[in-house]
Amino acid sequence: MSWKRGAYPEFTLEDVVAVLFLLKSPTGRKTISEVLGLGEGSVRTLLKKLSGLELITSAQRGHFLNKRGMELRSRLSSSFSEARRVGTVEGFPAYALVVRRPPAFKSIDLRDEAIRFFARGAMILVVKNGEPVFPEDGRPLKGAMGELAGAISSSLKLSEGDLVIVTWAENEANAMKSAYHVALHLKGGEIPEEIKSIMG
Image (tube, rainbow, N blue to C red):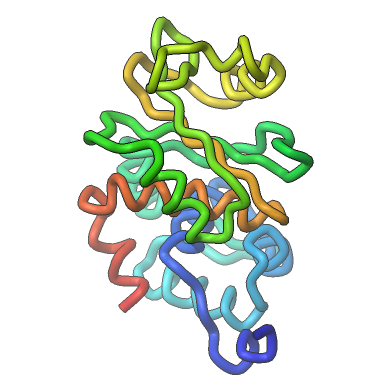
């Protein structure tokens, strides 16, 4: 219900993570609002909390991470990467990210988790011999979807044993945030306390 957005600023942990990756360069509030699909009131509250934790600097040209914010983002990046646009799947915008040192997982559970967070679909892959393959049978993605495999390899830094999460959704914001949702589901225990405290 969009009317709630203005009256009750609401954002999720996925929005917080997305903003930390987004603010590596100065970004205006309007752009943040469009990228995340959030109302400006929610973005204002989120930025205020980041500012209260002394993680961002605000200037004429926008908001950006300061030294402390960059350190926090770097800690986050050691668990999973920024989600990147990798084209379309089934006609919907698709995003992918890499989860480093993944715990044991079931692909079906992770796909369900993505769909629970507004994705239309998700694909779970592992990096083997430098390329994304299906974990169930080791088939390389490039055999089935060459363009997507190429986009993943060129957009993300892949290391042996990494997990690659690809999600697609009705819009860019949901595609990106559902990928972060799966990453947080897997690596929630490693998320720095400062990030969790923003939701408090």
